[in-house]
Length: 506
Image (cartoon, rainbow, N blue to C red):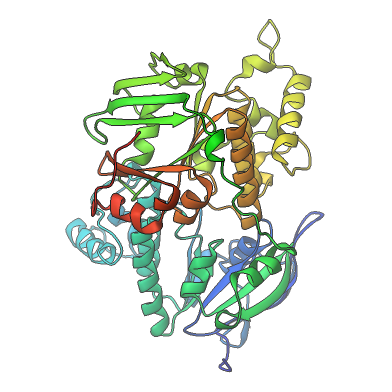
């Protein structure tokens, strides 16, 4: 690759007070290439992308656009150059339609006093048809996280980009939706559009990218051609060590008893899921698989009474539960960790210690109901040690932590109430490979000590590598289960798409 870069970064630094987020990094992007940017959370990837998009200004260094130095003063200036950015954090306007969100930038600069909503919806439908089937008339706020992510991608496709930045675009997507995105990426690259692809998923990088640049601790480490390397080379460059235990050893058959921790019978809400029945055995990690929109999250939220009234029975250790709302669920020992970490999992602007105690402040309050700062700190310190939480001070806001450590705070918040069963929805979404390995180890340790663990994941390798058994949801019903040698991607996908019914749930 000898052609002139469309975008080049030379010696860029960025400091936030005494914190050096970037230390003289270099980056070269060529026309028509799909260039992966890899690194652990906190490595500086998002900081550099925010500088390229004009959200942040560099402390030092320079940016060259088509060989000429430029100052990108704002996201509007970046768009004017031809830079499109699909952020990991979704930023749609929830109270307007999908179509209005997709064409919001064009609408803002339009001089027309009236809006042709039918034309807008028709054009939005054409864009969306490339990747998914979403009604452009729906309110964006009514969509699940995965579909909101697809709308963000559709927005970027409407821009006349020369460079497209995709930050963890498949974190909430099903395999089918991700494959549609990859086809679009390749078509864009064939037209000469350069793509920066940020992802922690090695399979996606190696299947779809041409080169990969690795950052570590705010510094440039290396750039490698994908055909010449292995995933282990990338991981080693990212973390500075070899990670060979992404998934801890599974429970031995003898360690999973016949005792049932949780039993769900005929759970129904008449709209999104029907006649759902399954058991969680002591000592096992149970996975829930299925396509986006199949009803996986809705089922779990229904169990915990986060989705209103449902019919059916839920029993814990053989005792039927009478649950009216999530407060009842918490008191009974059932807690839910949302897939939307920053929306529902943690309070970003609150202190770490306050987040950990948030589900049950009575545990750190005195008889008068006043929170004891000392007790709150002690609780957070104890759980922080258990989860290997990395932080500066417990009074720091959660927003100051990396994605992996934010997720650990969310898990600590669950553990603070002494749960009997934890439902985790996409527990490693948007966290780096090192943090994934730690979270997997934490979940296995919890299961081994008697806490019931149920994991919803869109990542097939995670379901297969972490879980002892997987039940699969298709169109709001459990279509079957797999375990042992039958726990393969092919079998899970067949059940998820109702292509081949297999077995019965326990």
